[in-house]
Length: 265
Image (cartoon, rainbow, N blue to C red; front, side, top):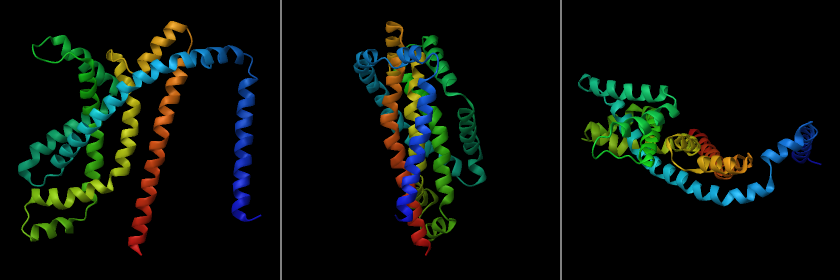
């Protein structure tokens, strides 16, 4: 048996042993039958799943709409923070304040303040839809994080790239648009995907302002059945959606690492 095959066999056996011991400890616990009935009830699971999957479409809509806005707003803020010269100091200052504030605030607080505060003012013409404020809150929160990812990408582009573009007659903004930003965006795609994995999960926070999405649907089912199995169904839906995206992100990171190593030779 080769070294690689032996390593694979040892890894498989150790994994089976560890998880087998964990399962044995759990199922031998004194109150396991009660916990199994409360969290792993097959009848409740299958009866709740259709409503939970239907509600998940709201999470997908929140994610897609917010993602498009976040990509644009985050890049805009990153560009503002990258503007050189003393004349742009107020702009850089305001952009920095925005990023610092929304990176410091817990997401649920922002969702509460926007979702209940602004509609409570009853200003004519101002939207009152919880979905609107859910998108607004997620956009404000994640744009602050994404702008820092973009800014790191912009800073990673060597200054000689900008100098070469300027020597060819391009203005500062043209250099950013045609030279710096395209390179920066390509470099930050993997970390952006990591942020959007977090965004997909954080869509459940909007249930606090009345949006009936997957988590709120599971709460309704739990209250109707007096059983916690709908929460397990919700967790499985997120696992099925999120893990493939995480593996795709890892693949992109490894591909970029191999490309950088190849170019360095």
